[in-house]
Length: 142
Image 1 (cartoon, one colour):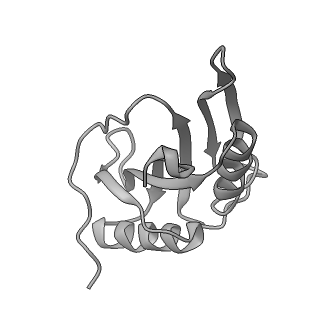
Image 2 (cartoon, helix red, strand yellow):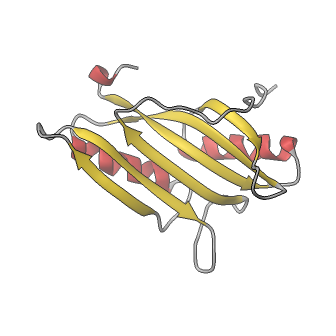
């Protein structure tokens, strides 16, 4: 949907600690169920820094007619995956339009997530187009 419809893209980077690609795809599907929408996957690959982790970069949609609604709705969406997000922004232009807003979650002591395999996540609502780092998207579910 176009931004003029009140919809904006929210860009996700999710890292799952799982043993193989099939398990990573299963966790991605669980994340979609928690978010209540399908993700448009731009990349899906083993995380180069840590063996046994898979990174997914994808886009979802949020609704909001104002910066306040976009910020609130992105936080509510993020809360479906994990708690205790660190946020950056919001950054508004001179006209008061939302330029960017985002958050990061990192699993650790005291950090709670609704997916035990989710070790790191990042979301961003931005005017800038999303540029994935590469990798093949997962196969469509049967």
